[in-house]
Length: 399
Ligand code: CTP
Image (tube, rainbow, N blue to C red; front, side, top):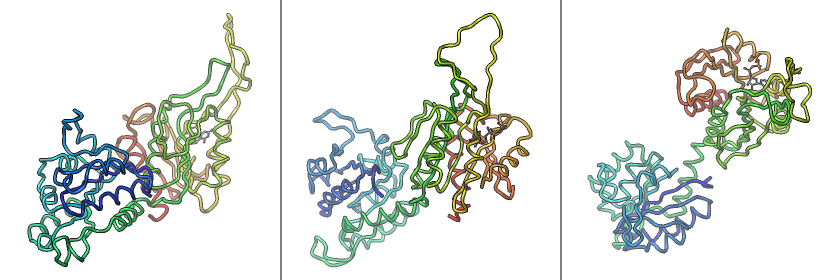
């Protein structure tokens, strides 16, 4: 669950800071990438060297490290993190977080972070009970920061009560459960096609189209985020994919067909956004075709409609989603494709819509379900469109 997750662990000045060493060790063991930020007080309880060695990353304490001359960019750190965990969170840091104070690197990273924030308080029982602390905690909860509640037990002061930081193993269990909740497609296999296909005419020329692959790559990324095991079959494109998915590169419609047929049977959800060539040259010249004075005619034959082929093999457990790119009679054509290709949903793009279509970073879609219920969306970034498509699919799955 934590594999490849980017975790920033913020450690505050509390005797519980010694537990940060175990926590870092557990995160690393679980496959997470960990960067530690220590407040200056925390560095009195646990050395940066210990945490740097365990995390295999430099430990940050200041904006500017005098010895190395390195400037620690709080915005970059905040954006790098998938999760920001503050453990132990002292009463002082909690108060700063609740009130937007920003006088050290950790509080600046907190304000810059866009990811979920979890905090595990550690303090003496009277500090914990104090109205001021409790009010600050309520404030943080209202910001959707997640409290990992302290335990009851013996405290460093020798007193007994609430205020003991949750044990590192409990923190790991807590965050694992949280991640699991955010991953509704854990254990599901998703197949996505993207990009154009190139149909060779001779060794130097091909028939292709303007598809950039951006939409399909955004869809694949979105399903990775939802916890699915994603296979992306892509035609030629400059788009880069994350390492968290299985990418198969193909050139032609027939190669795409072959790859899809290999993957489809085990796929729970298949989304075909590729712009597959409908026709391919009957013969591919083995040498470069030389120009002459007359006209040149290239005989074309129909390719297999991959989506229709998969639709004919689809089982009741599988979901199949297709795209329709139209320039006229858009809705009529899209609905006809939905039925003909045995789809669960069809995503219509019209080249007549501003902000839709090839190479742009935006798209405008309309989705039809099997009952022809129509949902129209505004022009959005392709990343946001991918989220909209995934929501419709989650709805079909009752999630
Ligand atoms: N598609 C496919 N294999 C093909 C052609 C299209 O899998 N040989 C898929 C596309 O990935 C898309 C859907 O079919 O999901 C519709 O593609 P589109 O180009 O809009 O329509 P076509 O079915 O090719 O029909 P036409 O070009 O006549 O509109």
